Length: 155
Image 1: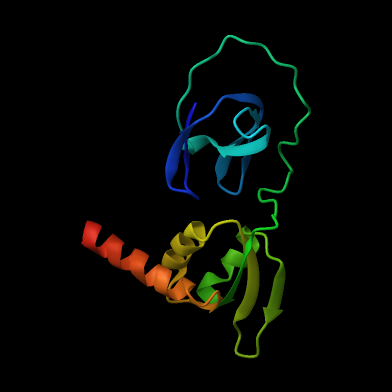
Image 2 (image 1 turned 45 degrees about the horizontal axis):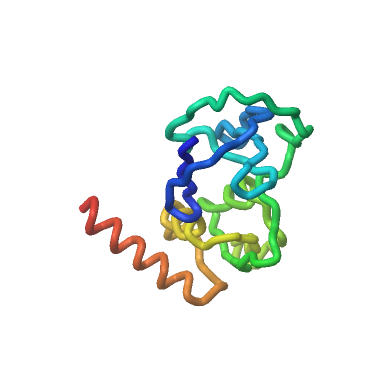
């Protein structure tokens, strides 16, 4: 299949053994064994651009589909800390957080584990100005640069 990985903003060729399709937090997902990585992977169905059957059969491995965590923290994760105002508090309900602290000013401080910062940049464009970046320090610059590129492209 051709798969667009938003985290790396690239399209890759994958051979998979799909085991389950399920719906969670607004998207359809495919749980599959990925031959390229040699491990279980979760693919968003709307990011699959093309498929071609191989005609080969496979034995299901019993991969966990519906009910599984949609994100598995890794040792190379970046620690992202955000302060969320009332209009952005949904972020803490929608995404898995490592920590949540209610602040005296009514905002919610959350720690989000992130394998890559690109998806956090896009998230911040959605919730701005109701979210403040605490860590990592360079994330604000990255979001400003993305906003500038987006403005140039779409006016």
